[in-house]
Image 1 (tube, rainbow, N blue to C red):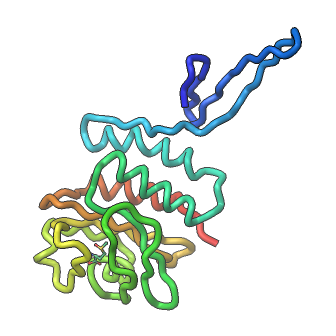
Image 2 (image 1 turned 180 degrees about the vertical axis):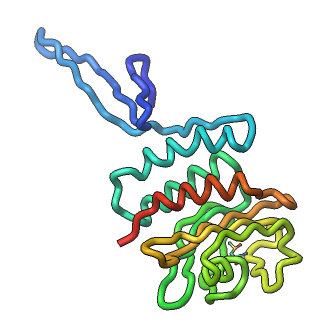
Length: 191
Ligand code: SME
C-alpha cells in the first residue's frame, strides 16, 4: 500500500504518513503497514530467487508461528514462479501430512519411503525428478504434474517435513532451485 506519501522499506513494510486537521490543529500519523505486493522479478532463475529470498526472509523473520510462515513461503514462491503446485508436508506420527500449500488439492498423507516426498524424507536429501513418470512409486496428486523437486526440512538433525514443488513442464528443476530452496527451508524454525 504505497500512497503518494508512502515510503517503501526494504524489510517489506511501508510507512504511510497522513495529515489531518481538527479544530485548527494539525496531526500527523505514521502508520506502519505491510506491503500488499511482492516485488516480482524477471530475468534468469537465479535473479528471480535473488529478488525473492530477502522478501521471504523479511516475511518470516521474527514470526514464530510455523503455519503462518509456511503459508507465506508457499504463496511467495507460487507468485514469483507460477509453478503448478508448491507446498509443505509435515511429519506427524510417522507420516507426512499435508500442510500449507498453493495449487490444486493434494494427497493428504504420505508414508515414509513412498513417492518422491516420502523418499526425500527417508533419505534426508533433496530429490530432483525431471520426469515423474520415470520415478518408481511417484504419487500423482495431479495428472498435470510432470517434474518435481522435494527438499527436506531438517531441524536438529531430524527431518520435520518437506517442501514439494511440481511443474507441468518436463525437467523444470535443477541445482539452482535446489540451492535456493534449501536456503529458504534452512530458515524454517520449528518448536
Ligand atoms: N508427487 C508427490 C506427492 C505430493 S503431490 O505432488 C503434491 C510424491 O510423489 O511424493
